[in-house]
Length: 185
Image 1 (tube, rainbow, N blue to C red):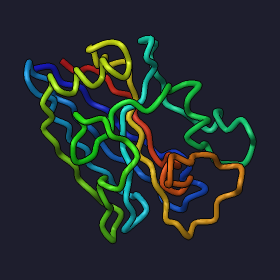
Image 2: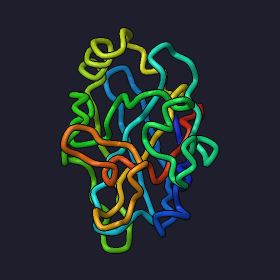
Image 3: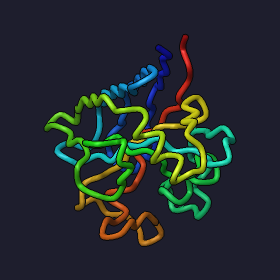
Image 4: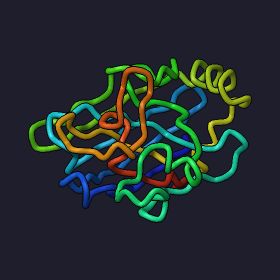
């Protein structure tokens, strides 16, 4: 088994009124990927999309910081993360192996802003779908970052905050926390 971890730190905390943080563990065997994420301080009673992001060409992804706010609106939106973090790759939802990203089957924080997520994923199916999308079966977890997204629909966001994915607006896709995945064994 190979183990990867990420310390998930706040992003956009000064604008959203919470300081989302937590940890992630990804344990890889020959047949399964077990994903465990625990988050604290997220916007309460809100669904939180969570994914790993990266570059299809294998470049190492880095976490976004306030420096990525290129339009100066005070928010680092989904589109602004792409220069350092790449694209959304694998969702941490009810079936990561399907790589179906825009939907409403992600964890929902409780009234205290806490949620815990664990999923055991069949590795071969995930690798097949990953290869179909990105040209390689190698997940390269230590070259990826994890993003947690989502703020309440009533939070005032400027029009400059981009993030529409299908029928989901920037409230759903706004990053609230990020962590670099590192191999620990």
